[in-house]
Amino acid sequence: MQTIKNFSLIRFKLFFLLFCFNIFANEISLEFDQRLMDADWKFLPKVPASFVKNNYNGLGLNFEYNNIAGSYSKSKVDLQLQRNTEPRNVSLYATKEELNFGLNFNNKHIYVLASKQNAKPQVFNCYEFGNFILGFCEAANLQISSTNSKYEPLGDNIISISGKASTIGLGYKKLHNNFWFESSSIEFVKTNYSYNWLTPLEDISSSFLLNITIDGVALGDALDSALMRLPQREEWESLQLNLGIKQKFYSIYNFNIIAEYDLIFLDFSNYAEYKMTQDINLRIRGGIEFYFENLSLLFYGDAYLNNLIGFEPITFNQRTEHYFDEPYGELGIKFKINL
Image (cartoon, rainbow, N blue to C red; front, top):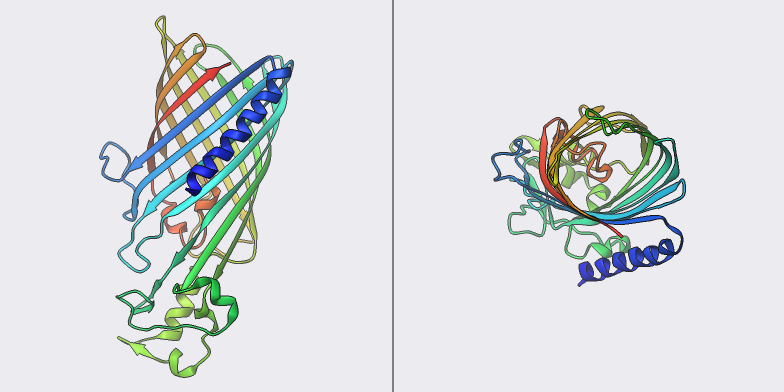
């Protein structure tokens, strides 16, 4: 039901913008973008063991009025993750809104961009700390609760984690429109990350509990180690340089072959890395675009050097950073109509 409500809200925003822009705009287009990943697809790069499926979809509106151009889009990421330890299901669901607004002149486009991304809180009824499984699942070997009222929202869960990311930036794009290059772009982007989590485990002060030992590991030591892996509560930020090249090889028939290359350089500040943070990523896209009058349909594949770092900010924190030194791949379809 919530998904239906969210989709209806997205449609309302898009059609409201469409109505407003239709009065003034010279060109208006609508886009629908769908990307999928399944760990069982052997033709994609091998993903981390806990990755099961990913479903990305986005809906967008683009407009131009004289030399002014802009876009609005809303997208969601539904990443299914399954681990061998508790919590076993650590799936991520996040939504993102993006705005882009700028000026066109002589095949050049200067623009500002902004986005915000919010993750649905992840709530777990069990958490594994070394040899300890704390919580209320069947596998738990120790149950810990608190009478403190601030933990009431947890119910029968042991921990809740929430996060959001906001981005602002400045970009420049040049249209080349020759056989080798359709366009090139450069962007300077700043992203702020904000995470919070709630668990009574951090309030354990009983020396009796903290000194309980299983297989030579004390509960206090296991807790300290595990809590360090949770996203830091203090906000941090990243500065990002994005370099992009797009190619389109035109056919005499109703299709084109496209290739895109997006190189990203990252610099994190005020971030307490757990082990090692990747500071570069590369996405390569290849596809076939079919078109007819005002319609186009693009079938494509994406390959990432270091997972989604720099592309989906909300996916990155201390709990997940060990995933971002491995490749990742998706298949996609994009539909566009010019109104």
